[in-house]
Image: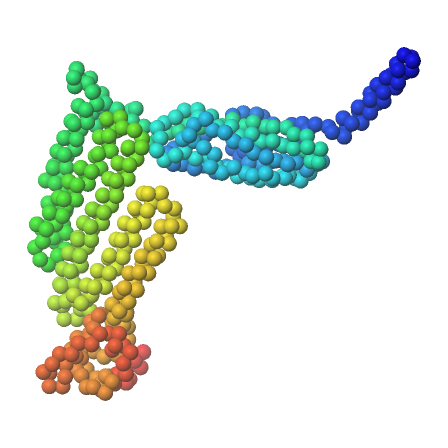
Length: 422
């Protein structure tokens, strides 16, 4: 009986031994020679190395990952990622994908740094790529190490407790703390703004005053003084906080608030200067007999000026608070559309005035009949045209959009004028 058992066991062992090569051939494990992983400019699985990347605050870098299937079977690809710092993360990772036999696929992934963080060195991120041979489900995992260096614009290590951010504070106690260079630097910045007001403001005011008819130098000096003092005072808050060693989140908030104030203040100052200059220039041109420019154009110039200043200020503010370019363009378009629709009548008069001046349907002194009424042309302006009645007892003002659309008979016009000009 024992002999029979031994013979049976021996037969089973021989059978298993003979079948083992066949089974192993059917489930041959995938090797690193059967595929290749390449991250353009950073990594190649044939020559394994860590991926080193330098990033700044708020930066998002996108990279391309190529997987080459050198095998004669399809490969299923899955990704897992891990970061060892909350400030640096994978923001987009490829999903599950399949690579056909002897084919290649291109995928993309992104690594981003939060907007507010201090400088960091060698932040480690890992990407695991599991490659599974189909249909046998034999897998191998490739681990890629990323070392990210964050270069922060809010890093205060180089400016902490230094006068103006670069002169060491070597004073004895109790003046060796960061409060001393902070106060001294702020006082110096205030004195700098005062000197700027004394030296620069009168020259700027005089320059703009020459472009106007009235003596508005004092108004210009007041505007420029307020602008210079406020701008320098507000902008220097950030360097002061850096000297104090404030956290990156506080520095970022202070920067956004100060820049918001500067943008609004600068826009208001530019608007005031623009209005002063345009008003005075139009007043000067209006006194010229043959000038087509006059103070009636002020609404047009005011509308266009407001449109341009508002669009640029809004775009700058949106960019400051992280809106993308597409959102800025759409918003600017909506603002432009709203202002244009609001000034539709004004723009209609403006362009009608240009049309009348270019087509020369009548000139000053011409006797014209408009919709059956007799008039004498007094003055053609861009926004409206002035007429008098026959006995010169009244001045009639008609908006140019109505004049343009009316039927006009000019008894003084030369019917051969165009032929003579030719």
